[in-house]
Image (cartoon, rainbow, N blue to C red):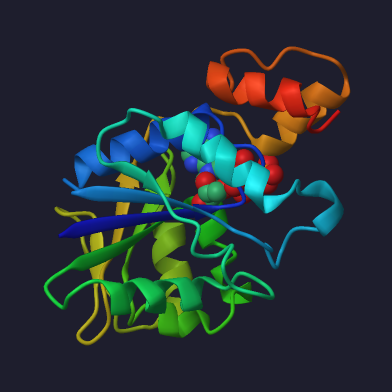
Length: 214
Ligand code: ATP
């Protein structure tokens, strides 16, 4: 089983997340892609983030009918801050040893990984897929990996991946970056502007029905 785990606040989920997930699943031939809303994101202030149950529901609506996509509520079941290391260990226990677990993350989030709990341990727990923008400088990722993660990572330019003698692999993949963010969407709603086509119609209807972000 080739598994992809895509974590995020998804406050709300939008077309940038969804298109990225589709492209990564295709590029890495993943059997299953799990979207994992963070219950209590350690790095986002709580007043900006709507209820985790609502964010989970929006993810569920967004991926309804998309083959191989599923949503996981594992972080909602835990108390306290939602740490990725705990989520990765959970999935490591759930799946057999032959499974390959890939954690999917945007380059912006990856560049802040040193602030995540036990961040070095993440790299011995799951492979990483770092989503880059076409034309973005891979040399800055290389410098970051060598400075903050391990000097033993070696770049393979053909396969665009960093391999390590003991730890998991860090893959880089160019995706179509749709320049939209959840904060911009929340901002639009607050100012009474349309969010049509920035989120799936079903998600937009849910936001309106619940009066979220206004
Ligand atoms: P906010 O604007 O509230 O900070 P966000 O839109 O960046 O939110 P998150 O839920 O924080 O969304 O991001 C989850 C993951 O999705 C991160 O790994 C992030 O890098 C990635 N991501 C966010 N926006 C995009 C986008 N437009 N295209 C591709 N990946 C994205």
